[in-house]
Image (cartoon, rainbow, N blue to C red):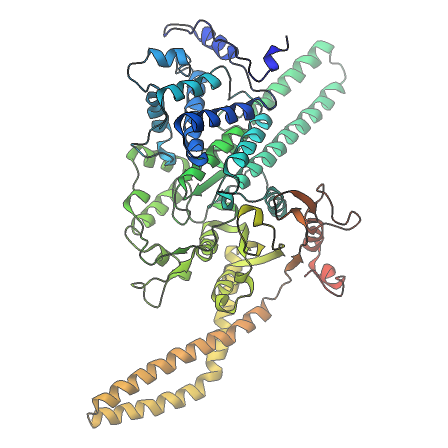
Length: 613
């Protein structure tokens, strides 16, 4: 029959099981839930959104918030059913109508909030703010479907389409264009087992694509293993057909066990539960990122609603192999912004769980975090401190995020970040560049066209920075080089310094002898100012020496077309292969960078008149 493909078709769920039903009956119940096909999920989401807007008269973003809550409930119920902790499908209108009270869906929402407590997605008193009849209509639209078993392609594409239709630029700053996400991820070259973070996750674009690519790597590797074992088994002499079949089945089952997403310790389980982390300070975006990841196949467990400048769960200093991020621009962290108790305190069971997962590094990070309570957030960063820690600076958020990312990276970890171009060339931001150069090796800078982020509501011209945090040996080499350069410049200025200090000290002694207090105060201030000014001069003169002695090439590229127009439409793309090429016969930015990595000296030598490095 074709009726099951019609958008309006609905299928009743029969014989809702009772509490004493068997596991087999629960499994049968799950099988009666239909998976979404093709555009069904997008259509259902659109219909639910329209129901809420028409009946409860909520604006698009508020309506989205309520749909997100209901989807979290739906996922919670399905997972409880699959884990055999639930005796029946609670997400049906029939069951909800049997509950006592006017708003039974919120009973399920309370259970969902308890499960999601550590994610900080919902406030303790938060509720589904829909009229009871509206809630029933939404549940009626979703109850016959199995969201968990629906293809990630169907769910993920539909959910992203729904996001685009719903927000239409209202929160576009939280969405990094897909071609930019793809390019940045390809540039850093993700490997299985690496721990990845986006401290300003937005809708989760970086984490979702990282999850997809690493999952593809794992599945491809598993297939290679199986094909290799199959070749060995099939060419082994003396085996009967039955023996070959048994060995092939055993090999298949073992490899499936190794990559299992359901078994703790499986390669896909490890990817989803121990390798992907993110935070966003906007509660709507944190929920969106988490649900977006669920729709794309999971990996959402490390995503939290939290200030990305502060630690939470497994997000603490020195543990990430890769950071991919597009931090917020334009806003500032005020000197009055402090670390609040609810940003630091944890329930005892959460503390124990995280300590079990992350071990001693987590305990040390937590001890350090406790000391930051009620301190100015800006004072947690070198780039946010004024001359005195009692007076922290008002600092641009993106500047603090640069330092934060370097703090979070493990030695040798890689960073890919979208930044306003002013950070790269504004004379007043020299301290930011110096801070980066002193902690990481700059790998590449890719300048993007001005219109790249216009469709997302941003007018700032941006560049992409790729860097690799110093290893311990590199950090020591840099520190030694700086110390040597400072010593050399100090020695150079020593004769003049000694002469000037001797002059000032003589005048100070004379003022002390004649009890000229005003003169004494002025002379002491002059001496301190001279020492401070000379120290700054020595440091400034040492910098070019350090750069000269630790000189290395950096890949620079200025892009004209990056796969998206000013209005958000697809466009030609010169960044990576397989996109719509700007110049089909010329290498892309990614391919040029790969050539550069293989032999930087040869690449520089062969560069054209207007070099790319």
